[in-house]
Image (cartoon, rainbow, N blue to C red; front, side, top):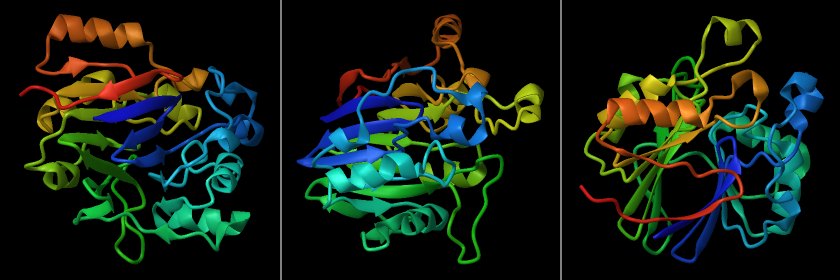
Length: 262
């Protein structure tokens, strides 16, 4: 069993096996302050970052500001001084510049599971945010994460498009919940500098291809220029009747994630 609190965008607090993890928390308005009023957040901040105490691990998928946000991560790290970071090199470099160089920071564990606690393990999966890119050391610039605990497996894809390397990395895994971004890329969003991800139909097909029992749409609620309406997602699910459940883990909502039936 995994308890999940939605933070909006791609952010979650997960509690399982006595471990508290945070993935991609964005709990400020840094994007609007950096890039303009049109990117003002559309939903309230669920928790002030300084209120997130007792966090053991902070997982980051990539270095974009809505995923690696110093205005969130610095006070969060202060509130949870024992928290360790896992994230790609660019995210770790941002943290170091922000005064967190003394904190333990690990690269994403691609290809092999690591134990976060007894019975709780984690593995990184490459992500293709427009393209699947690797740095000079061969490490992925963008990642997703597989988290397994108590017989429940969550795949948080990060920001991604479908890619053969992702499917190869997930081959043979039993996935109860696939958290996939649905803020599609298109000509108009590209023109506005919005780096989009999966369309809703692509997310549906990707959920099928990885064998997910439940699809959780993410990255749909925060910024007006790239919002996706949940009614559209629900309607397509009703019309297409794909072989997976659809569940929203909305910002501020607390949910219990359990092993899904085959």
